[in-house]
Length: 459
Image (cartoon, rainbow, N blue to C red; front, side, top):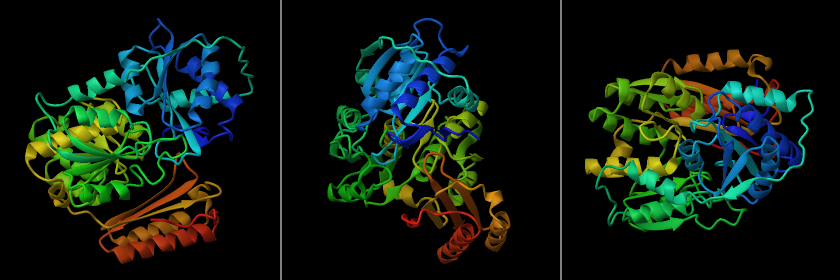
């Protein structure tokens, strides 16, 4: 198992290991040594692009990383506050050796993270992450000699905005279309409103006043109640919430009902199939996607491949089979026609283009497939005790699965980015799946799993 990397880079509470200044310097060194010298990287230029979200800690983290990167004689292009997908796009376009995004995505302000992109704009492979960890955690001392940071600041916002708009059908616009945008007080606070204004939308923007300490607090994809409410109050066609680094989005229909990533896939995949844009008539989903969605897609002639949680896993499966769409319930959608990773802004305008083309409302698409009831529990834990080390736990899961009788499922895992146990139970009866979830969590706690008692179960 990897010790530093989770499902999306390295993440933690700032100024606690591994986010201490000295170790951050070593991370910068290791990244430039391992990724920057990959056979796939450009041999000329020796350049790395660095972007970040709006967290106050980002500047200090960037400075520490830059010191380690500069020790390997790389030029650093500082992109300032920008979105994760913008860095993915720019690192390939600018033929940089690799890219870094300083962001903890949807996490609260006290967290931060480091995401890495290859020269192709893709998340790192597991092999590259392991080699970085071997260097960082090995016995060999990393000696970072002081040197002058070679940093140039460049604002590529216009380039990214133009790229996103070029993906739209010729002549498409949002003239007069009322839309609520929730930017999570994060990386999208400037770029997203500009794109929608230039497309002619009548927008109301919330969560667009980052102060370094308010990212994802009461706004954003995971906290979208204000967006849902404002969509109704504004009389909008839809509302859209991005997360802190804008690599995902969540929609509202005109009635204030949420559309998550499963809903967006249910719109996009059949639309693409009807227009011969869905290669192999196949889509990639994670194990968290609703059984009702899988049934609906199968009925429309779309085969589904399921992979573990994490947009990197979705992307890798799509790359392997040359597929065009994949996504997660969380709102990470990969439209591989246009971009190699999840892009919340790109997804939002593509979904809008599809829905507007059909002449239907978002409320229609909210109702056009039957969602199985789900009960989801997220519980903070003191330690991520392996499930096979908890007495009788695997047998307990099998017992509960048998009670579902094939009309549902149980999915349990530890978060790759936070100290959380996540449990999903899905079935035909909401009361029954709540009962099953309670029984599983009780067994976990009784036989060896340790909860952080300060944090209650939430669903």
